[in-house]
Length: 90
Image 1 (cartoon, rainbow, N blue to C red):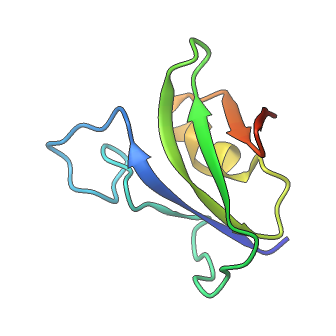
Image 2 (tube, rainbow, N blue to C red):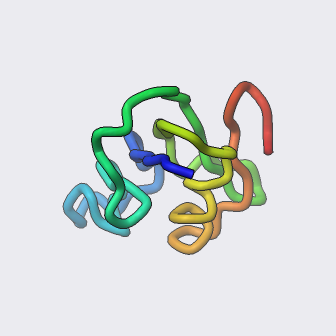
């Protein structure tokens, strides 16, 4: 699959960290070495933890299943366990 995603809001950011880092993920793009020319099929997503707290909001583009931002970044970086995309939980 050919996709890329971007975090547009980090709702739990440590504002002492610069944007685009693990401590303040606004602007983080994935997966590593993502092709930034992929712009089709733009779809919004939100990633949440087990308690329902929203950590990140962003967009995914290209050919994807929907779990990619969660698997690539949300779970390993912040322990997110759920993603809201296409108007539903996956």
